[in-house]
Length: 114
Length: 113
Image (tube, rainbow over all chains, first blue to last red; front, side, top):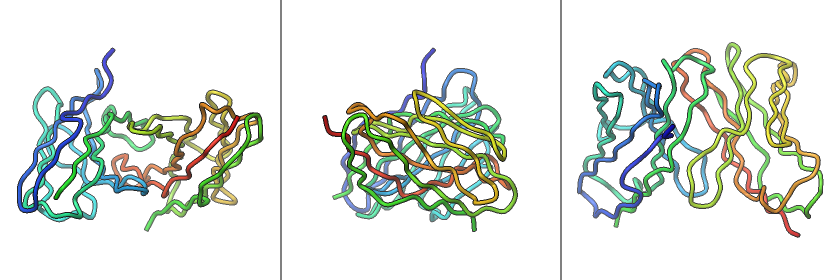
């Protein structure tokens, strides 16, 4: 049973560029959440997708957007990158995203913005 | 708003020592509580969880009890191993939202032989 997978594992971009990160949820899961983890900090919630809709959003600007596909996989897009976007981006999946449901995390994509 | 506060690290212990990592939370309603572990260069792995007051979560020798009266969820292990060296995150599941996790800042544990 495959767990949560993310691609790519590492990425280097320059300021002003755009980036797309990808996530495939654990088998049987239909809800995908994205988190940003800056170096030395805890993960911060970006948004959650369920039934191909953004269901909840954290305190992130509109430069951060996402999408969920019919097969439940998801993308995170970040436009107009700046240095502060350098972080580990984590995807987590769960079933229905109900409160208290365990979220399973992928290995993350490490983004470096120069 | 909801928040999680963890003891600052790093915590440095000798192998077979007793471990406590303190975690307290602020939340409206009744959140579920989690401990996640992050090994170097990896994502987060669920260590244990508790979904209601007085529940005890346990896994791999680690345990934590959901204490509503003190709003705490301290992580303990009786005898740590070198392989337990990692960063530990306490988190709550926002009870008013769709399973959004709110994390503490993390506590780094280093265990020496």
